[in-house]
Length: 496
Image (cartoon, rainbow, N blue to C red):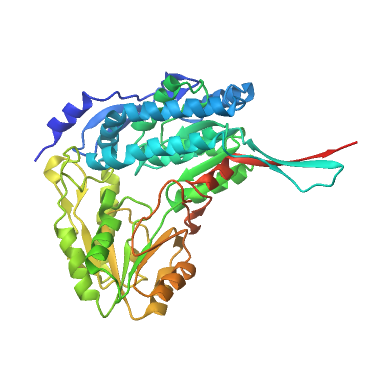
């Protein structure tokens, strides 16, 4: 089986930008170095991406600083800035089919996901923060009659953002939209595995009226471009989404340099808890499967630890396995495909390595566990479920970032809470129960930034997103995200 014809046809429908976008212009990396852009659909090379390093990052920071200090964006009247950002959202929406194709080509997720979810959510995110611009007020303090105290929010200045490959443009928009809305100038460092949509979006932003130098993009690998951005002495804040291991490096770079503000959204090993009084076994089984198999498990909130009460475990797991066995990896460019490719060969081999380790440590393979569609040349792994998992096993403790469910039995509610919190992570969790006491107690007991009751991934742009423990700190989404991109200033005026 080959998907090459579909890739070739898709490439004719998109505009591929591969150079850095600095100061309103596309420019090759100063070193001349490039990175191959490989589509995971069939393993073929579709472009050569500029491999930026410290010199390119420095040029981008200079452009961002100049635009910020000039006030061309930071001092633009709020209503005008709102209009420009709404025009940017309109541009993204007008090019949504193209951006969806780019995203699928770049990281292998099904076109139905990028077209119907990811890109529309980008539009929604930009519009949400655009509308907030002229509706957020500063404060007057309760000062004495002979003084006036004001609490005002000011933009930080130059914001760097390092973003992941699993939702390339959506995760980027969670950073650049609130940062731009609050008047900052921004440098984006997208993941080298999936940079194409961010580069195209920057071009569309300028067409919409965002001034040159306000939104810059430096593609390249994390060890060079990402590290240089995090260490730069003239970057005021660095926001990051990615692995906990890299998040720790980013935090250290912030301290080593200018003590820049750092916000991290890192990994997860989220528990989904199924109590024996679960109100709807079929709905819960479907949610348990899709909590891991959506986006091929490449989701930081994936419910990869499936905690099921022992009294119902065999019955419930059979239902989850039925969903998994009905999911067949297929061509991501086919509208009917619901399960696509992993982002690259390295990630595929990492996932397969975890599967091998799960078996070696004594977990029982229920289904999947193998590479799929190898004849396509792409990077596919079948939906995989392990039973008999102990929470101390590697597959229960480490983030796999692939389509692998670890099913863990528990005896009672207290046992479930103990297992749920027995992790270094704290990004998300869910519980299915008809018992209101259990629902409330679990919501408050589990140490996670997002807790869902009788559903999974219930959220939208209006609710904060972020984690506890080694899942990071700081919040994306909602009006709370604006706090990351502003300084709070107190002004006290003595009246005569």
